Image (cartoon, rainbow, N blue to C red):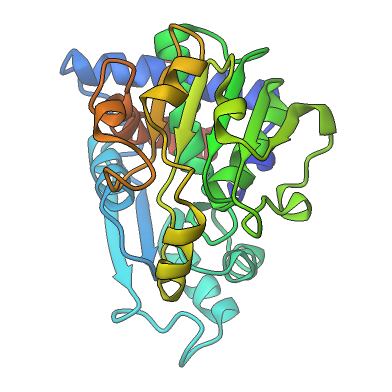
Length: 304
C-alpha cells in the first residue's frame, strides 16, 4: 500500500506511469467514454482548509470513476479535537477505501496515514501541495513534451508549492530557478532535495525568468498566513509576474498559476489572461491526474 503525502513518495517510473494513465483517462473523458474501474470504492475527503478546485476535482473524479464520496469538514468530524487523529484514522479507514486530506500541518496528515489501513492523499498542507504539481507537470507535458532538462522559474513565496516544485525537479530531472523576497525563502530542509544542482536561487525575479521554459507563481499570502497580509504586500511588490518578466523567458514559455489568482498582485492580468497562460488547462488537469493517481493507489498498474 502506498500513500501520497508529498511528491517524493513516488518514483520517476511511477510518475511516467501516472502521467500516461492521466492522458488515457483524459482522452476517455473527452470522448464521453465511460470508464469506471472504482465502482465499488469510496473516497473520504477531509477538509480543514477551504477548497474549490480540490473538492470539485476529487469529488467529480471519483464519481466519474464509478465510486462514491464521503465529504467531511472540521464541523462534521472530530479530527484531532474530541478524538485523537490516530483513532479517526483507524475508524475512517475501516469504512472507506481511500482518504484525501486537506489540512494545515503536514504532521497531522502523517499521523493519520500512519494508522490508516487505506491509501492517504495529501490534498494540500502548509508544507506541500503534490497534487497541484502533478497537474502542472502533466499540463507542461501536454503542451511542450517531457519536462526533463527544462527550466521552471518560481517567482514569489517560498511556500508549499515551491517546496513541491523542488522535490519534483529532483525526481524528474529538471531545474527550478527560485526567486523570493528576503525572509520568504524556500526551506531546503522541508524540500528534501538530494540533488542541489536542480535548484538555483535568484534575488532578482527577472533574472530567475531568463531562459525559463515555464514561469509560475502563487498568491503572496497562503491560507493560514492572512495575518501577514500587509507585510507581505510590501515585501512582494517586485515579485509580480509581468510582461517584462515573461519576455525574459523563452519565446514559447508557458505561464501557470495554481489559483485563486489576484490580478495586479502576484501576476499582471495581461500575463494570466494572455497567450502564454495555460492556467485553465492546468486547473482542469487536477481532475485527470487525480483520477490516474487514485487508480494507481487503489488498483496498481492497470491497463485499459
